[in-house]
Length: 458
Image 1 (cartoon, helix red, strand yellow):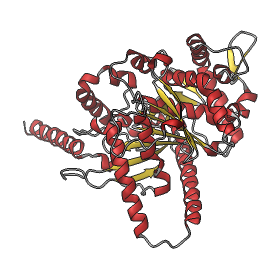
Image 2 (cartoon, one colour):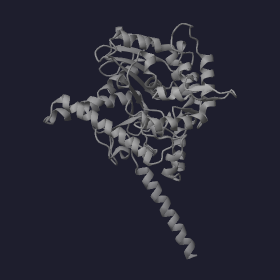
Image 3 (cartoon, rainbow, N blue to C red):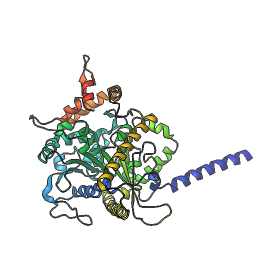
Image 4 (cartoon, rainbow, N blue to C red):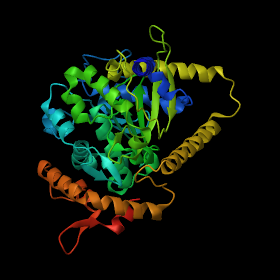
């Protein structure tokens, strides 16, 4: 009897410890060891959040729901605004904005519309491990949406970049569902910049706001130099390993789903998660906006931390009443504005010891070193398909071996995208063909990785 009672006490104490740790875990803990972001690298984020909000307006000359301070956009610089009527359900609505003030070509993609069936179709078009691409795994439906957008807008983007002296940066930005499309757009363009007039990787950027988990860990780290994710405190989406299609099937019982996922992941070892090549993650470098503290009421002045995490990459669900509200683009825009003002005040208060241009160069070198260390960390943890980018030959061989297993799925993707996209027979780039260039057909009729194409795209 005493042994049974002792065992029961151990079990009860263990459960109480687990409940305490889960209930006291807050979003602030995810980035507690990260360094603060600088003003120059965070400055575009509030401005691009306002551009995303502008996608929701029917007429920017007479906006109905402007954020505090307005959109601060010139309506005459809007090149194109595409609604659900034009996308035909193949992609979310988006806006192309030519920002002459900041020398940027911005493609802003809106988030999930809960009343639009077409958005759900994009989300549901995926299964775990269904789509392999660029040596890793990606979300099948989001990749199809990205290819559709490039087929439709690549000539417009190429023309804008060439007409403006080939000096403007090209920015892809999206919220929630749109963040996944923007991230995969960036990966394709980064590997095929010659199809957009030869735009270099250094002029390409993506900002994934409230990012969806859309790519495997090796791709998330590999493209951290061009893809930046923005997370507000306890946002549930970048932390939820459950596939997107399952999350939004349960959108009306989301707290129940988050609790069950939290309970399940408690018993999955960290090493097992990292070794699963099909597991999807939020992409790129992370910017975490923190505004709440443990056992404190209300919101504090927000801080922004940044890093390229490999292990511990927003892997824990936060049981918080703000988990869903922190996903809203309106809250992210407001808090990022406050954070930018706070960073600027802190920067101006410090006495500069070096000229600003030198500081920018030093910060750029620091970011490059962080990216290299993250790639090395991924290799040391035996992350599937992770290879440092400075070993091009090894990377090419590795990608050939791994991508061959996903050839059939990629061929099916190309065929499906071709049937849903109408384009003329002129000299425009067909992005289905660009993706298909990575593969050739052997004597048996099977598709295999094209070695020459894979080498030239790196």
